Length: 222
Ligand code: CA
Image (cartoon, rainbow, N blue to C red; front, side, top):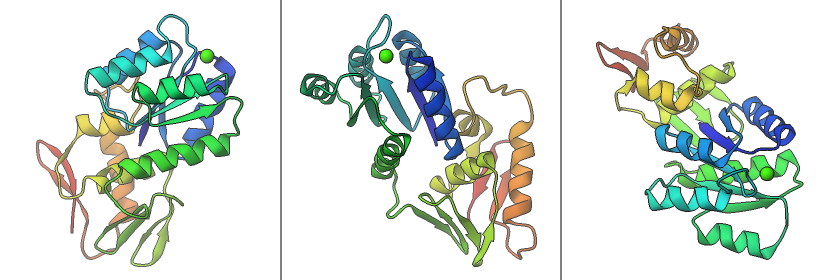
């Protein structure tokens, strides 16, 4: 899952980004509203965390513009003031949830997970393909009942593929959802990670689940 964080306070931005990365999310950070709006328009994010007080374009305007352009990703607003006004304005302009500063990271993470669950097409956060199981809440992956240990990137890649099971996934789609803004799409890093993942998911099993679609990309299916 790929998250865009728009926050001008460097300390908060780096603390939140670090925590989200530890929780296996891919995170891009923008320090002002213009940049945030631009990134949200050109990339496909699964969630936007948007501070209200930003230099230049504020969070409310960013939110309003995104919604007017029919960009409908979940938006979690952050505000320095716990005022009813900010909350109401944010929610009126299309935000999905609201969190007042200061907040504990645990609280933010719980909101993020709830919003992502709401927009995810599965119940209970458990994705299954054949005997492969991925739990989106605990980040545990198991095949045939045996736990599989994945790195953050491998987990993000597998989760994205499982959310799109049975569909051909191109390298461009993978780079947009699983890698961050400065990803160099000319490297073969996706193929390298896909090999790591296949070694862990498919090696030693009779039936491979990850398949190469020549000239297009990859597909995960039974
Ligand atoms: Ca701010």
